[in-house]
Amino acid sequence: MNSFGQAFHFTSFGESHGKAIGGIVEGVRAGSAIDLSSIRHELLRRAGKDTDSIGVSPRAIHEQDEVEWLSGVMETSEGLIALGTPIAFLIRNRDAHSDDYEWMKHNFRPGHADLTYQLKYGIRDHRGGGRASARETAARVVAGSLARQELLNRGITIEARLTQIGSETDSSRFNAVLKEVQQAGDTIGGVVECRIHGLPAGVGEPIFDKLQARLAFAMMSINGCKGFSYGIGFDGVHQLGSQLYLNQDRTPFSAEDYNHSEGIYGGISDGADIVFHCAFKPAATLRRTYGGRHDCCIAVRAVPVVEAMTALCLLDLLKIAED
Image 1 (spheres, one colour):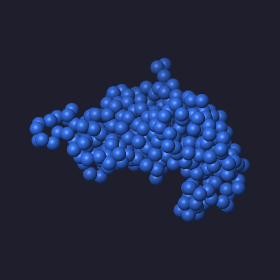
Image 2 (image 1 turned 180 degrees about the vertical axis):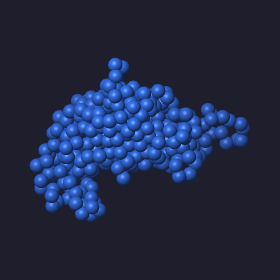
Image 3 (image 1 turned 60 degrees about the horizontal axis):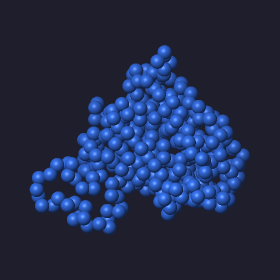
C-alpha cells in the first residue's frame, strides 16, 4: 500500500532516482491557509540543513526540495488557500547520481529491501533503492506539515528529538560520535523520542484501533525504523506494580492522580502528554563498502519524519471520530 489514513488520506508516489516524488492529500479543510514557510522549514530539517550536517548524505544537502502544487490549492491575496479538493504536489529529483548504483543491477545489499522487492515484483528500480529509499519521506513531510497546521489550530503540538546514537545518550557527544562513524565509512543506529501535547481525552478505540497501535503502525512504516515503545515501554518490565502504581488502597482518585501516566490507557488517550520512542537501525549501505553518498545515521534526519507521521496519524483519528 502507498496510502495512509482514512478521513485524512495521504498517497505517496515516486522513486528515489525517478523524475520526481510527490503525494496526494485529501481531507484538508476548504479555505484553510497553507503556511508555505512551515513546509519549507520541515523539508530543511528532513534534509539536515538546519544542523551542521555531520554524517548527512550530500544528496540531501544538494537537493532543493521545491514543492510544486498541482491541484487543490489557489493563490490569493492572503496567500495559498486549500480548495477542499485533493491536493496534489510533487518534488523533482535534481541531484540523483544513478551511475553510483549501476553495479547493483545484479547485486543485493545485505539488510536492504533490494532482495525482497525483486522477490515480490520480479523487477526493481536499483537506482538508489527506488521506493525503498528514504528520499520518499520528503513527500511524507509535506503531507505531515499540512496535517500539523490543522493540529496546531486545535492546540495539539508534536515535538520529536534525537535521544540516542548508538550507546551514546549525551547529546553533547552526538557530533563526535557521528564524525567518528563517518570517517570510518560506517553507519550507526539511533533513537528518536516524540512527545504529543494537547491531544484531548477519548482518541483511539478499545481493541484493534488502539491509539498506540495506530502510532506504531505509522512509525514502523518509516524507512529503517525497527522498534516502537510508548510510556514506560520495555523499562517497565524491570519494575514492580507497587513501584509504579501507588494508589492501591481503593481510595477514590481522579485521572490527575495517575502515576507514571503514559497518556494512553486501554488504547484511548487520557488527555495527558504522550511520549513514545522509535529505534532506527544502522543504515544498510556503508560508504566504505559501496561508495556513493549515504547517511551514517538515518535517525538524525528521521526526527521530522516521525513528527510528520504522528501528525498524519492523529489528524486522521480525530477526523474519523468527527465523521
